[in-house]
Image (cartoon, rainbow over all chains, first blue to last red; front, side, top):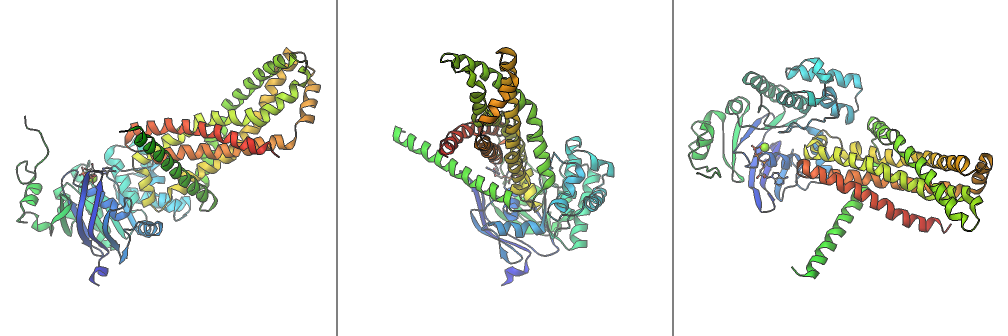
Length: 259
Length: 257
Ligand SMILES: Nc1ncnc2c1ncn2[C@@H]1O[C@H](COP(=O)(O)OP(=O)(O)OP(=O)(O)O)[C@@H](O)[C@H]1O
Ligand SMILES: [Mg+2]
């Protein structure tokens, strides 16, 4: 089967909440060492899609294959299989506010891999440096950080244990343009240097162009366009066009009341 | 909607909730028995639940013991049985009031705190984040709290028993002219091991219930600050009611032996 050559293969994924069908048959795949960027309007279900793939939400229908194993049935062993090899950056950072920054970053090393505190701390400080934060930050609590700093700590936490598969939900939102670029480089380096596979969500077109090997647009619960980032400008798809250029007028109608 | 439909759906909801709670308690108990254990999380729960509850439990016990001594004296005077005050006081505190009052005080402090902490972690996706970091939230968040509360409550109750009896002693000796040594002798000769042990056993069960209710409502909370607030409120009420109900059930079994 050709399916097994993909690291991640999603087929016909459906997910709804009471009277709100969010995903209506999503098909995507990511190969080893490749980076996929998903774009799409606010509320179009990008975060839900990511959570279904990583196994935090149970899809209503469809399959999610990771290295050839279907994990959509969402059993405990499926989830363990998945979490062993993935790292995720949450849109809202989701840092543990009762732990210090370095303990957040080293959470997995300390509590799942049972590394010594010394070793875990060294690794955490190293990861902090990679996201442009100084070692002193490690001893603060997350509440003492700005939103952008929290996001970077969360990124450091996602990559700290060198996972094979990475999920980034809006990694650069809330960062200044320079720091965004640092983070973009970091993501690219992770995928290229470590051979990880990545799925990222972003609204930031510059970031999408930089980190994507491939871009997919989610609209009305389906992937309506896939292509190379260079082709975003000339996709020939009016919806993608409107999105990329950020125009209020076009086929995508925002639910606004015009007065 | 007609009355039958309403009754039916309310009953079904209640059954469903009870079932979920039982499954949760079972998962929590299993996670507490099987490893891996998170000792740091356990000790910090133990300090927060056990140690910091000491003052409030001690105060409750001393005042309850004191008031109880007055009431027993007043009531037993009516049939000239006031010399039995130490014995009655001892049994009431050790078998009933110590465990129940200490558990209710701890429930008020700790079920709510657990529901709020875990609930906030739920609505800010910290629990989701934890599972993506290959750490089972049941083992890291819930099992330590269950073990800590189940172990701490019997110890707290033992202390509450002693302080409660001491409260009664103060009133009896300094207010009602009992002889101190006689009071102590009467109470210690009269109390049996099973009086104390049954109280401590109940305390362990109450501890388990306090942690399960706090964690369950926190773990299931949805929808931001309001959801966490609702979870906190429900957790305290559920813990208190389950303490009182299980107290009656356990007592009715324990008095048979
Ligand atoms: N737990 C949930 N319960 C009910 N509905 C939900 C839940 N999570 C998401 N939704 C709904 O699913 C839809 C998609 O949400 P999602 O968070 O995936 O959007 P998104 O594409 O990530 O948007 P954004 O770019 O703003 O982050 C929304 O309409 C949202 O209301
Ligand atoms: Mg989102």
